[in-house]
Each structure stands twice: as structure tokens, then as C-alpha cells.
Image 1: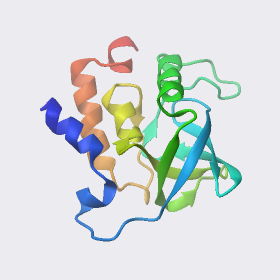
Image 2: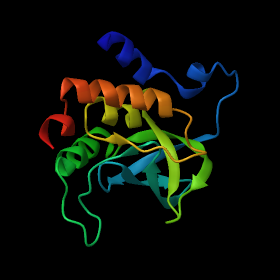
Image 3: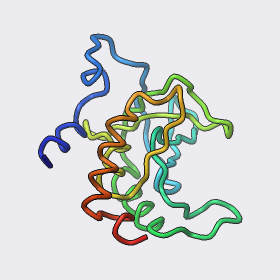
Length: 156
């Protein structure tokens, strides 16, 4: 079962959907991980904030909000994993949120970062249509993490 979940995390998004065409995407350099689910990137020479689609990590930097249980661990993992790396951003149907951040599925060396956060128990799912392409996959990973008591599921 774990091998199957690991394989799902590594699939490219268009393979799961059975599509021949690739979704709109771009390569970017991660200049900073803001927290567990937001990064700053250099994209086409411009600085952009990127919010991961489909996941929500506990807060660590939100104004007027206390640091939440397991937030520091999620943020630390994200920093270690992608800061200073080149990533592929696969954009959602809606490209930006109300704060002007780009919305994307993030891939590092073929690894689906959004799914990895959920699989490790560092994030909960957050489905906001129409950016719901992987809602089912992320929910299955969340349920498996919760059953196993991984990450925030065992600590919070």
C-alpha cells in the first residue's frame, strides 16, 4: 500500500488524468519558503508568491494568528525540501488567489510536493473549486496519514 501511495506521489499530473497534453506550467527558482504551503519564486525574471493548491499547513507567519500545532515542522520541511531549488509550477484553472498569489501544484525533480506534505501529515487538504484536479488523491493521502497518526494527526 505504501509503495502504491509513493508511486502516486511521483506521477506527473497529466498522466493521472490520461491526457496527452501537458497543463500550463513554468519552471521557477525558489528564493524562499515562506511557510509550509507558500513560497517565493523567481519566475521569468520577476518575484512571485506561490500558494500550493489543495493543501493547508498549520499557520506560522499569519498576522494576528498564533503559531499552530505542527506549523513549525511543516514550515521547516518545506524550507529544507525546496528552498534554493528549481521547481516546476503547474497552474490551476484559477491562476491567482484573492491575495494575488499564483496558485500551483509544485514539483521538485518529479516529486509532487503538495502531495508529499499531505502524505507526511504536515498538511490537511483544502479543496477550492475549480482548482480541484487532485482533490481525490490528496484526500486519500490525508486519510492514510490520519489513520497512521503521522505528523499533525498524531500530535495535534
